[in-house]
Image (cartoon, rainbow, N blue to C red; front, top):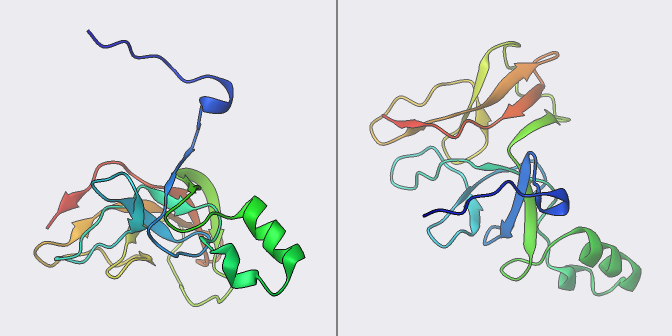
Length: 156
């Protein structure tokens, strides 16, 4: 018999969870999970396909990269996670992702998919072996995405 319960208080992730990251990603990058439950780069491409489970809530940064500035290293240790050692949070839905480079040019109100090589695209993957997964909807002027990573996806 299964003894399932709803997590409470600090255990209740709402729209996020945490895992060890094997990927040195930046904040808001799409990540997936490998068979060991570790975060890796999400990718819709055939041959390397990994469906998305969410976006990184913060950059995955090794504090040793900031050893020359101890104050910054302390901040990194408290706010970021170490690759392959500690858990890093990832969000599945409800975040507004803003592209400050303003080079997406997405059509507002239309779905955004997991892209080939990772990232976001409004071009639906269509080649054999590629993952088709909606990860949100374009909003604003086409340089924003309302995150809503669908658990279901298909493979072409």
